[in-house]
Length: 150
Ligand code: DAT
Ligand code: MG
Image (cartoon, rainbow, N blue to C red; front, side, top):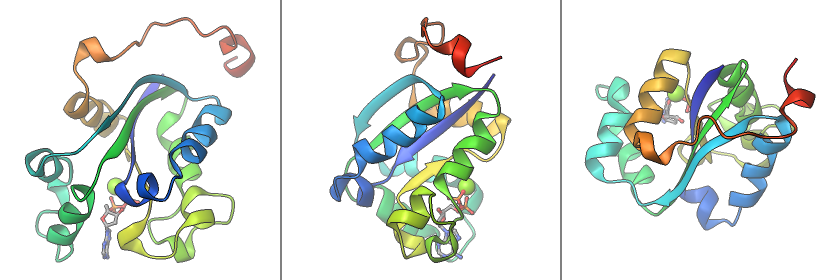
């Protein structure tokens, strides 16, 4: 099982798309093991986007993600990383496939609605950056699991 950190970004929360976005991951079969509303601190935002620190868009990216509350989720599932990224769609919403979150609700790269971790290693690290162990219910029993996982 892989873990991925999903961030429902400030634009999506402000636009009332939180439920719509959660619904898509839930319907896909990914299991929610942690979820909360929070206003990300500058320190956490800079840590989360550290790999982009030298990029010209870094400052704007940090300002955007700390501009208003977000909803973060830790999701678990087989191939959770690839599945969640496909559900989110390409980084640039204007190029994202219709049917994906970005392809259905976005136009611009700086307002691209959702984040998903890009590797199993980063999934573990990012989930740990946003959730304490006690906030994660990794072992909860979901009765439909045998109809989702082989
Ligand atoms: P993703 O969010 O699809 O994983 P990423 O990790 O490459 O994309 O970049 C993180 C975020 O940074 C992305 O969601 C939007 C922003 N970003 C990436 N490339 C950008 C660019 N060329 N111009 C402006 N913002 C960019
Ligand atoms: Mg990324």
